[in-house]
Image (cartoon, rainbow, N blue to C red; front, side, top):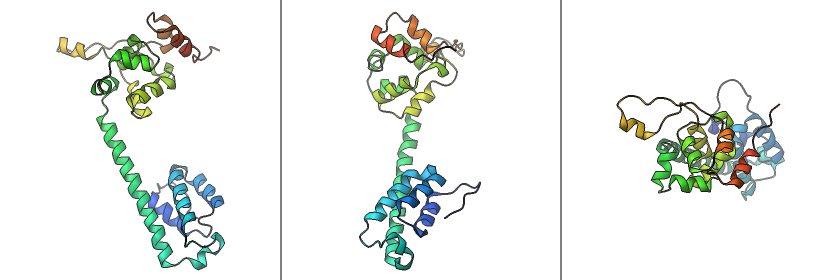
Length: 216
């Protein structure tokens, strides 16, 4: 088995080592490789499943003596397909990340109003606007907020969560009304905003307040 060290390892190196191991494609062996390289759990699992269903694979304990060039080529084909699919998925993700300019820009691009996105995310329009402008302390925002908005906009959760971090701003109108940089506003607690919001539905208010951490 490949030895771990402080140097980063690539997926193609790990899969090459894995297919050469005596126990491949034994599932017990798979668990050990996942323990050593958890970042490649999906790839190692897919690779093991693919190897297990290959009609020409011998039993795991006889693999070393029976492995021939044809089998190795088929195994390497699986490796190449996994690498290609991973790179393709990463390229799509990178493009999506680059396109995302913020919650407000994304909802406008999709033709969704502030009110509509707020209602489907169990928030008020006022609270959604404050979230868009980073006027809420990020550490007080429940993960369910990002999950709800991400689901409605069909964007990755981490992009929404990242949107809440950074300096608060006063909105695009401030830039249009003055050549000077808009003044930064102060941030408040998400739960305080929910508690004091007169426009949020009462059932939604209770839903969010039930998630508020208890004070020690």
